[in-house]
Image 1: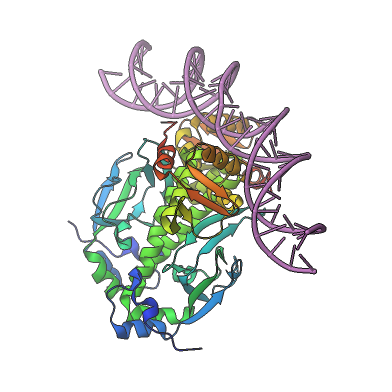
Image 2: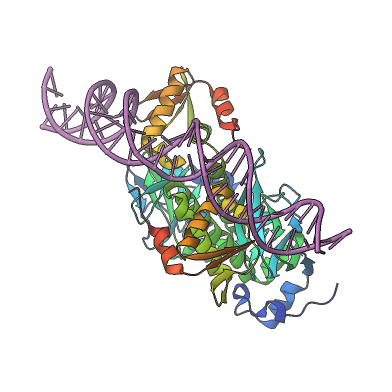
Length: 233
Length: 233
DNA sequence: GCGGCTGTTTGCGATCGCGCAAAGTCATGG
DNA sequence: CCATGACTTTGCGCGATCGCAAACAGCCGC
């Protein structure tokens, strides 16, 4: 494996303020790998042998129920840790991680964790914070699913995607990795039919532009209004 | 404040295998407090100044949306940590904690965290694991809300409550703190009317026995069947 | 350039669960 | 012992969303 350069991670918020030595300590047990789109980085219920950081690309974290239903727990953006099941005492991954686009991933064997945490305490803190933030976000998702209409949830999901991975185009802001209606349905707990219908409606009203595996937001403000549109309560 | 005795926490799984000195180190910055039923232990969006451990009683963790909707994120059982927002870098509590029954709570000021973690590394690991487990559970909740019918979700919620806080009675296993239909609705993302209807139905079929702020499970196995009853997929 | 595949759109009927409304019923305090 | 309030039950109608089915459309490889 080639030696990894600290410039790979020096700019990441997770490692802000670390010394060069610390960066090297972090990188020395790491390996980097490439994953083509749709490749599985790790699978649900597989033995959790490593944890990961996404250098470039997009990763979809998917949970599959015993009945075969899939739910997209989240998309991982560049610079984020993922697959840190082991940090919380699990021996298997609770979800699968799929490359939503071509990816470059840093991987550490779990065995490196104690030493890393000892040598770079900020790394452990970063992991704790990552998990904590996700807990928050996941609970926010629960609230949405409990209290909001499908249209609001989809609006929120699209806005989140655009915010996380938006790319400006002449038409508006588009999500810069391929995403299907089915994917959006699996993020919001609905069906691709309903997503398609809603998006079509928005497109007719000029809020978004659709396309094959593509969504472009033309009028984010209008989407925000839809997301906030209270009904119950 | 009275000196706290290590026997308070010596038996808790979170502190298994610690020495007496470590237990004392953990307890020395802690204070204990009592909360009557329905008292607020901390409130959502309040400044997070402390973290807590439930010694006895039951605590309900509630999130309220800007529109005023309430969702019960979880019930805290005896021996569990809660309100550890600060560990993940937050300055305010993301939810309220209400005593669902009379409670005894240990409280540590946030300032004690770094020292504790240094002196008793297992304490930090315990916190990380607690958060990790909750993330798992919360994601499981998202899956349920995305893929299951209301009846299944209620069955699951009741089973979880019974498992966590069940008490045997001649009639069956009852939840050993007061819980309303409204509470169950807020756990499962539905309305108290629907919960009431479903529970009435179950009662007629002899699966449960209802009562004012009380649910007794007569036939857990049948409830499990309902919970697993696949429909979609 | 042409299948064939994958993803998208749309119609329609069924239904689950909600919202509203009103009537019980149990516990508590005066 | 009764009044009061909190909790629960139940009926009814409606609407959002699903499930099924079928037609369409962009993209890839041959």
